[in-house]
Length: 60
Image (cartoon, rainbow, N blue to C red; front, side, top):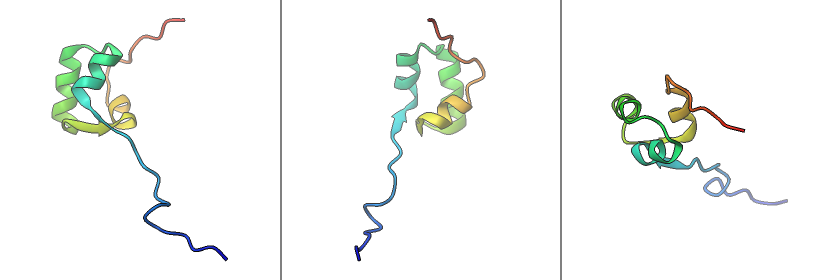
């Protein structure tokens, strides 16, 4: 039987700088300021994307 270490079995969520993430994704500066006020300077990708009012356009 194997011992499961609870410290190593927790899934890690990557945390992004909100302003830097918005710049990289081409999100407007006003939208980035709104996000910083809403969720703070650091957040995971899902929190950033779910709180966007204008979704970035994806080109094919």
